[in-house]
Length: 267
Image (tube, rainbow, N blue to C red; front, side, top):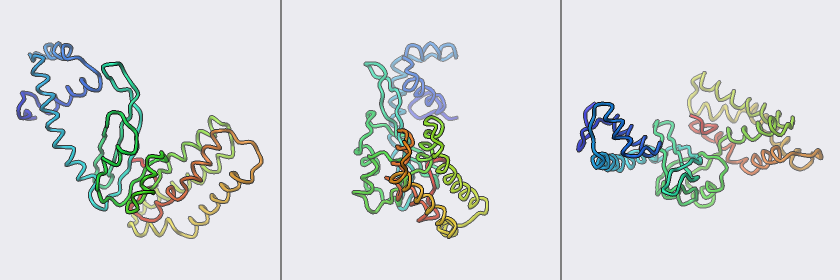
């Protein structure tokens, strides 16, 4: 590789240095010692200057990636997860966000002082004219339904599947098996559409076939039964899974509205 302008280092070396510094919390003196072993002599101030150069490059790269990922009419997937972040006061629990545009093959991880509130997503999206956003049921995303009517909000089927899996394996409630079987049937249909090479419109039609409508109606009937009529005791995990599916029913099955939508956030 060619060296990055303003430094004597290649892009590979700089990315390695950034990872060591901000992910592994490697202090500068230790980095200098490691580089000496590699027959490289770099002083601490030079390392700091290189970090600054990297920041300049990233500041130019991130807006370009956002333009690509949030282009008008795009379908994007978003999720967030907690991580331990090194601060001067020790390691604390903060949050990292991930946004993916599968069609454009762009994935962006963003971090806003470890926050997980609505403003992080609102500021990141800005005035983007995307078509849809798919997420889990975290209440921050509900502002898409309440405030951004021009963006379709979808929920990820893999999240509700996981809740029923927990209800079966940890809660030992066999009633969860029915939901897992229906969800697996829906996934089999998605795999079949890909194998057949169906167009977006053909996928939309297949997702709304008489057979699919019948299966989803059966699912809704069973959900209502377990929520309102079943007198058998329910464990917390099974109840949580039922409530989740009921609350986000429309968002979970909104993927049927468009053949370009996906059933979940998985790549």
